[in-house]
Image (cartoon, rainbow, N blue to C red):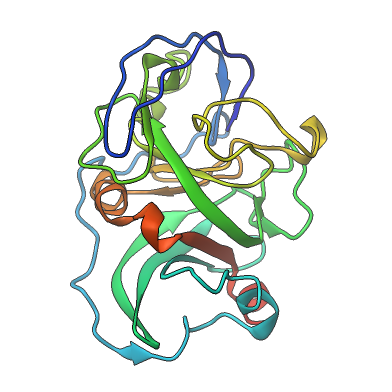
Length: 245
């Protein structure tokens, strides 16, 4: 989902909210080829897992070396396949020298799957390790610890199918081709427009996205309440084969 233009912004402190109005048009994840909608309120998160791990499972040395040494929270997105829109998201936290899986949820990624060389419009989610620095959405922050921007500018256009109208009620910016410390819908793309941008974790509509990762509303609320900038959270994302490489 690629915000096309934006006039004005509003930022809130950690977990806070400012209600200023941004006006923008949004070309967003899942804006065409619409699939069936999933219930916005389904609670598909599992009970917390307590398996003790030396590192996040399913991630090979190549990507694991890119996880910053001070990161103590990892959101892992395990794509079902290179060309699949289906994935699983799991949250891991580091306690001392070991990692623990806290929760996991079913999710969706780009409609055409994954790529290590993402470009705007390819309908694939970028493979890699990215920091998680900023959040926002149409709704007030549900106790968010990340800096949170609340604005009606996140509202999905109503010419989209109704199932997609709430996709951006809650979003967490994935720091791919964006400026950290800005609202998720800031359109600045340091690597250029062609490399795509505005890659978010956001609410699910039941099918693949344009490049984002989507989950249930309950999953988004949990992540917003849990991800803590003091723990330097990152997302490690890709299809399972690429993650292991």
